[in-house]
Image (cartoon, rainbow, N blue to C red; front, top):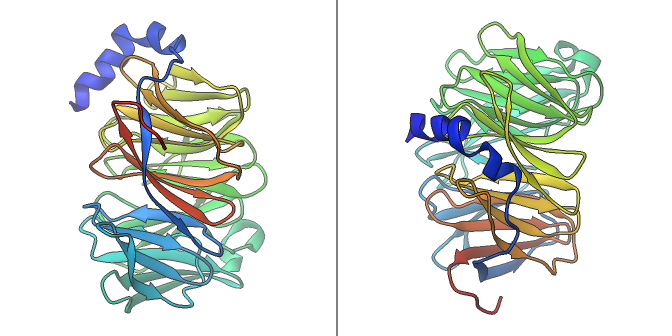
Length: 325
């Protein structure tokens, strides 16, 4: 699977992807809609049995059999929570005069570890941190710094490493390569940058990109451009392998757990799902009146959790037959 997809991308499907079909064949079935006062982020547990909903100032853990809240971590004061690989721990970051990494027991909410970094260690010294990702090997966490740099937290040594940076503005998204040896970051300066973790060197730079999501198995990166395209790049060559056209600006894009589907969210709340092999837009949902702030694939199913600016969390599954939403 891991080598087949890359070979197939390069050898046979570039022309198909560049002229994708736009007639949706499938549809979304709404499983649940939940309302919160304010939502920053949602994150599925690795087995899909729980969903972390990060509001301010709390983190709510939901049972996905019923979507009832089974745990609330009060006054966490963070905007995102991410799971480790076995779902036993949740990590989050926050900042001010110092940056803070919190690791909590995902079943009890107990604070297990608290690591800090002080603002003089980060260029321009601004640390209201928001985004983070756990490395696939569970040893490191990478986070933004709300400044030009990214911060890597070593959970074995409890040391921090500052890598960067972007030309101006904050880092908006970060992600690890599948081998935990490289990091991708996207900033409000419109640049996607790939960093060698060991050396801290910038090994790839692509302009005019919003967001960055590394393929779950391959050295492929997904991001969106200012000309309303979602693009797939080969990290090793820097080549643009595929693109998907949209009518509106795309701010969110993500691979599913197999890397076979791509979901995108636009400024007008329109969600599209694309089949990577055929290039077809297989499902679309419109009618969201609010800007989408987050979009997360289920770790095992063709299911999406989305967050709207008005605090609505929606759980939708892609089905092969049309039906009422």
